[in-house]
Length: 95
Image 1 (tube, one colour):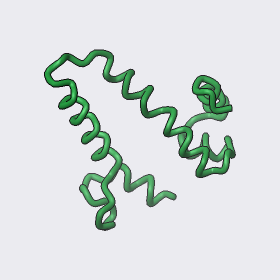
Image 2 (cartoon, rainbow, N blue to C red):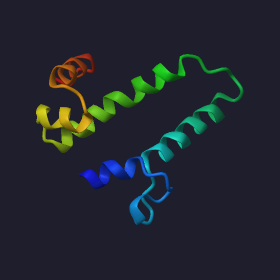
Image 3 (cartoon, rainbow, N blue to C red):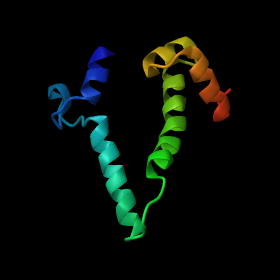
């Protein structure tokens, strides 16, 4: 687990020598660049909030799935307290 977390923030494109595994920020960068291409010159607004809303629910869903719904483990993995996790789960209809 620690290996996975450290690989997400590794400065090299190939994390921890694992060929083919790109750090998370690489995928985020590609998605944001593609978003601007699709805007075709239109001005983006509220981009920060838009990205957070688009990413937060699937992030919660995947981690909950990986922990088989264990909220304590999910909160630990996400670095949230359990109350905050429950609030976000309610916000996104995940309860």
